[in-house]
Length: 122
Image (cartoon, rainbow, N blue to C red; front, side, top):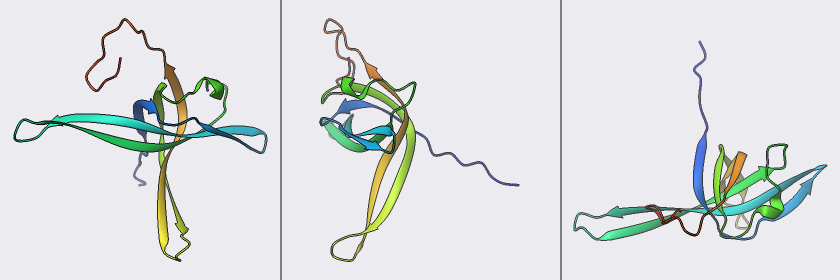
């Protein structure tokens, strides 16, 4: 009996740079970083914030918003899978690169009058 495995990731964060849009055959893709933040208190009660950066690639599809709507600072909700790539560096050593290959993207419209939620999201 084969065991079912799952490779799934969900991210709610902010686009960290203007997306790089390219053509691959007849399909467009966009690559951009997304930042997520986590706040926590240490044992001494001091508040800390940790930012994690995620490399994201998404391919244009019928349910994908126009890439031109993606801007640095946009709040995005992404579903996808983690993809790890191994390659040889200039020094001949093995290098690894992780990215989220998104299959769903929502650009969250923010209301300026709405108070910020924990984590800085509106």
